[in-house]
Image (cartoon, rainbow, N blue to C red; front, side, top):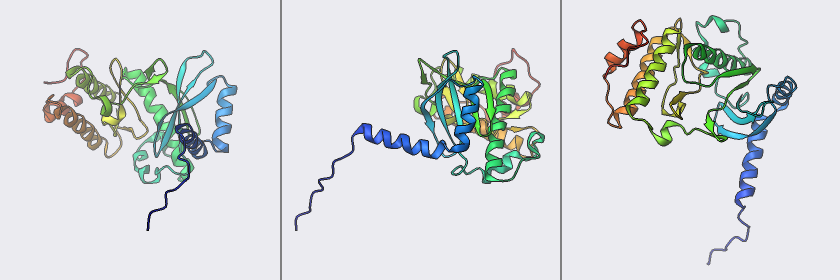
Length: 257
């Protein structure tokens, strides 16, 4: 028996994109989110919310603009679908979040505020990372990393753009963070955007040095980055690099070769 050919019309690309947009909006823009965004608009922090530039299990990031017409990044952490409960351990031993509410919403909002505070540390330490502007509830507003309204690509897509100089820059940023009392705890080629220099992103899991696993996370961050560059023929010794990161900081000292 011949197979019956379906006469259903294949959806157009525009219809598919519209469907995806509605799916994202239904996941992200609940009543609480819309109220929080409305408050930010009234305060002049946000002028427009344009479109998503990054979507994930934990958060969606939208390009937006401020009152001056400059592009900004608006990170909206997901309340219902985000797997944050199992990551509550990243809040341990952090005096900034000792009194959080241990509910889904409480933990998610703590991660948004945690990322904001971690980005403040990075800004003061001179780390290449987004500049934090504002945080409320589960929404974080920060600088937009990109050119002509398009975000920089992540390193997993384009690789290092400047060879060893990119590795040196990343290691120097890891060291600056460490001496400022912070460990990223989730560095990988997926959390680095490649512009004129590499920019570290996604600081929600970053921990202070008082965290019981801070040194374990530091070593993991360094190992992942060295492995990524090693696969591209740029080799560094792990033990020497870790020792260099932990040493008393000297501005003129470069990472060991």
